[in-house]
Amino acid sequence: MNETRKGLLRGLGILTAVLLAAGAISPAFSAAPLTKGKVRKIAKKVAKKQINALVPPMTIQETELVRWGPVTMNIGQADQVIGAFGPFTLSASCDQPGGAGTPERARVLIDTSEDNSAFDSNDDAEDDFDAADPPEEWAELTALTENVQDITSEDDGDAHAAAPSGTVIRGVGNTLITSFAGFDCWFAGTVFVTVPN
Image 1 (cartoon, rainbow, N blue to C red):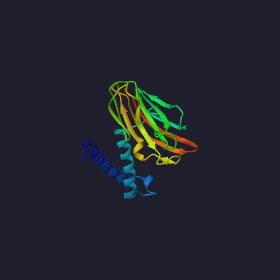
Image 2 (image 1 turned 90 degrees about the vertical axis):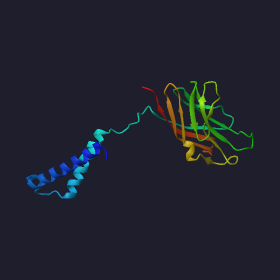
Image 3 (image 1 turned 180 degrees about the vertical axis):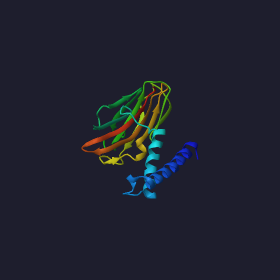
Image 4 (image 1 turned 135 degrees about the vertical axis):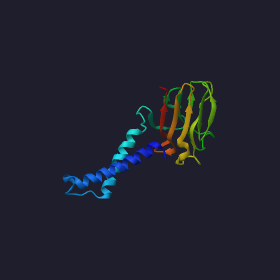
């Protein structure tokens, strides 16, 4: 058990004893005597405040979590930029890789302007991702058959990339759907962005 936890538990014991004694001698407590259960409840509340003061919760700044979408597209449309995050750019793409009459493919592509970047996703990876490299697949969904509604699995929601300058992005909940809401491809998601101080 670490010293901080030991100290807090010791303090909890002392606080319990003090509250019990106060309940026994204080006229304010005579109308509603403190039971051991009430004392424990009060002591836990105080201990929780103490712990939170020692270890502040991690907060995500509003600018770090960027929601995007929905982006809707049909086959034949030019790729649409979703957003630029430091040296990284994400774009939505909708096509039929097998030509007319074949299943639709919805993709989110990642590109970088900074050499020696790296990224990994459920669909692709590049350990040495350079500005001259073509865009890679951040997330991808190919329908099983043409004009059939299909949605990405939860694995497609996770992707991450890092640049030598310190920018790190993580895809959180990439959602791609084919043949949805009257469009061939439908996209939405969130990017968690960390940049150097």
